[in-house]
Length: 94
Image 1 (tube, one colour):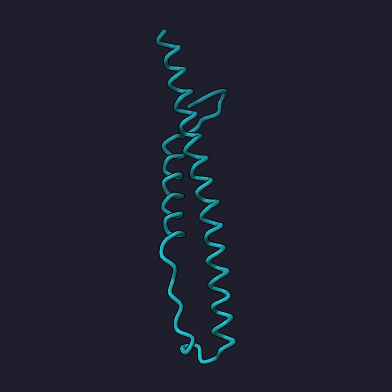
Image 2 (tube, one colour):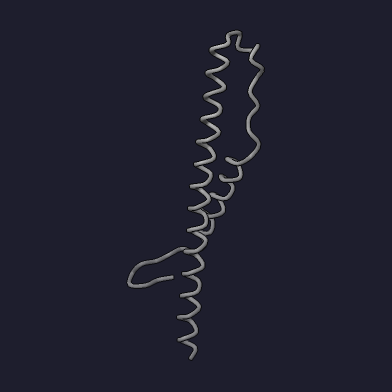
């Protein structure tokens, strides 16, 4: 789509949307397994690792939610540009 010198590459936007979708899938995939507490050899270290893992899980969930929002926004943008292109093409045909 081109308008007043502005160009939107819908294929590129679609590729970014798809890449963000794959990233979201990775972020929401199965969680990493923590080793047993005995592996750390220290209760406080084991507790710290567990706390870190819980915070990481929350952070990844928030990041995945934001990525999904961006992906959805790109999908809507692509849809709107395509509709505008089709409308413009229809006007030229008329």
